[in-house]
Image 1 (cartoon, rainbow, N blue to C red):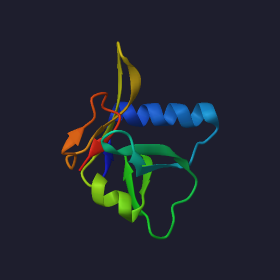
Image 2 (tube, rainbow, N blue to C red):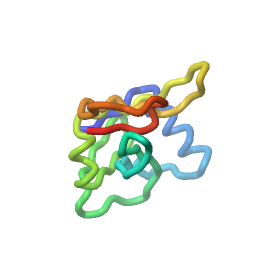
Image 3 (tube, rainbow, N blue to C red):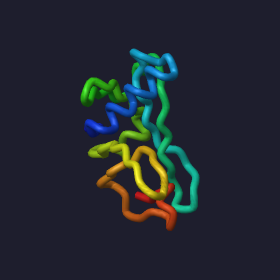
Length: 107
């Protein structure tokens, strides 16, 4: 299962409203790249495919393709703001290591 924190859900709702994307779901996937091997990709999408894993967390529809799901099961998406900037943070229990800057990971 994939979940989203209250703060992240509020930020997703805010972004969707600002961009005119209300009613769309959030696509979460893993793509190759970065110095550790994998990166997260997060964007709005109107409809899931028939093969997607579908979840709803705090009113936000989440869509994950089967390949990505094997790396993301149990992940919690949060939104953080700090001195180093702001953005979505992924609490993924499957990660075994990350790169020095934290933008990519390995499982």
